[in-house]
Amino acid sequence: MSQKPSIPKGTRDFLPFQVNRREYIYDTIKSVFKKYGFAPIQTPSFEHSSTLMGKYGDEGDRLIFRILNSGDKVKKADLNALEDGNLPKFANSLAEKALRYDLTVPFARFVVQHQNDLTFPFKRYQIQPVWRADRPQKGRYQEFYQCDADVVGSDSLLFEVDFIQIFDEVLSDLKIPDFTIQINNRKILSGIAEVTGEEDKIIDITVAIDKLDKIGEDGVVKELLEKEVSQAAIDQIKPLFSLTGETQKMLDFMREFLASSEVGMKGIEELEYVFAKTEILGLRNAKLDFDVTLARGLNYYTGAIFEVKAIGVKMGSICGGGRYDDLTGLFGMKNLSGVGISFGADRIYDVLTELELFPENINQTLEFLFINFGEKEADFALPILQKLRNASVPSEMYPESAKLKKQFKYADDKNAKHTVVIGESEIKNNEVTVKEMQSGEQVTMSVDDFITKYCA
Image 1 (cartoon, rainbow, N blue to C red):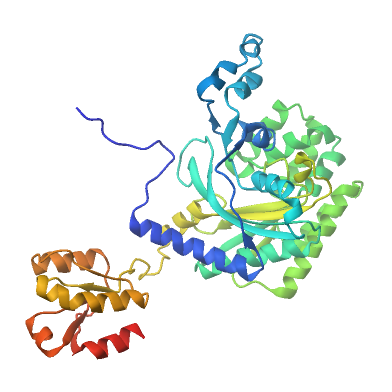
Image 2 (cartoon, rainbow, N blue to C red):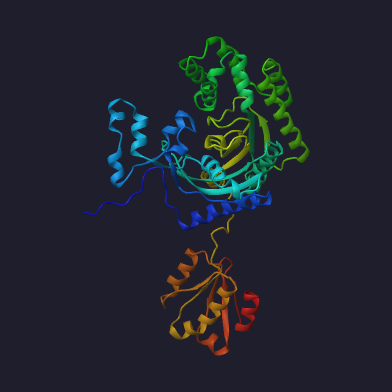
C-alpha cells in the first residue's frame, strides 16, 4: 500500500490563488522599498553554523535547523565531546551548516564579505524564506518568508524615521485599517538594568520583559526570580509593566526614572528625536506608541526597536526591527552601525485573509480563453492568440474540442475575464465573439477591431 503524501508540520504548499495573494503582498512591499532607495540582494538558504550560532541568544540558538554532515564528514564527529558531555561542541562537529534563522545575520556576513563592492550607507532589501525549529501554531511556521530592509554604514536616526514611514505606507497600501507601531530603545532597557543594580542581567531582563504580553506580569516576575534578579530590582521594574498614557508624559517619567543612567538618558534622547521628526512628516494610518516593555529578545539590538501589531486581530507582531551598532563586528568589521526592519509576510497574509482585504480581482490573471470548436476553428484563432501574447495579454486556448459546459467551467475556474468564441459564422465573416464572463455581456466584432482594441 502506497504511503499517503504529506509535508512536515510548520510548512505549507501554496495553491495558485495563494501565490497570487502572496505576490500581491511582496509587490506592495517591494514598491515602497524601492521608493525609499533600497536595492535587492539574495543570500544562500544555508550558512556555516559558525555564522549563525551565538547571534540570537540561547533561545534563538535552540531554534536553528542544523544540517547533518554527509559522506566522510560524518566520521569526523567529535565523540570525545559527546563523552565529556559537551553537547554544543559535539553538535557542531556533526553539523557544519545550518538553515538561516533570519535575514539579518546573513546580511551582516554579506556586508563584511563584499565590503569593497558596496557604497555606504548601503541600503538593501531582501525577500527570501527562513527556517526556525519552533512549535507550529497559528501565525507561526517553521518555514516562512521575511521581507527585510536594512541600512548599514550610518548612525543617523533619520533612517529610523524612514522605517516608521515605510511601515505606515506599506500597511496602508495593503488596506489594513488599524495598526500600531510600538517603539522602544535598548539603551532605555540597559538604563533600567543599570539603575536597578543589575547591569550583568540585562539579557535576562530583556528576554523576560519581552514575554510580558504572553505570560503576564506574574510570569515575568517568576522568570526574573529564576534568573536570580534581586527582589529589590524587580520591585523597581514592576511599575514599568503598566506604564501607559501620553507619549511625552511617559518619556518624562522615564527621564526621572533613568536620571542616574547616562546610557538610559541617551535612549530617551534618541526616542524624542524620532517622535519629533515623525510628527513633522505625519502618518497615514499608523499610531506610533512608546512601549517601555518592548524588548525584542535578539541580542544584537542596541538602539531603537520596533514592533507592529494589527488591531482587532488575534495575532502577534506582523513587523519588527531595530538598530544594531556592532553586528558586523562579529565578523571582523568594527564601527559599522546599522538599522533594519522585517515584514512578516505570512502573518500579514493571515491578517488580510481574516479581514477579507485582498482585492477581488487578484486571481483574475487570465484575460482571454479561446473556446475550442475543432481544428479548423483553432487554426483560425491561433494567430489572434499569438498577437495577444505578443502584446503581453495573458491568453490561452482550451486544448481540445470538448463540451462547451466543460470549457466554460474551465474559464470560470481560471478566473478568465473574457472568453472568445470563433465558430463557422465568425470564420466566414472574419469576426470573433467576445463574452465578458462576469456580466455575461457578449459582442461580435471584426478581427481587426479586436486586435486594435486589445493588442495596442
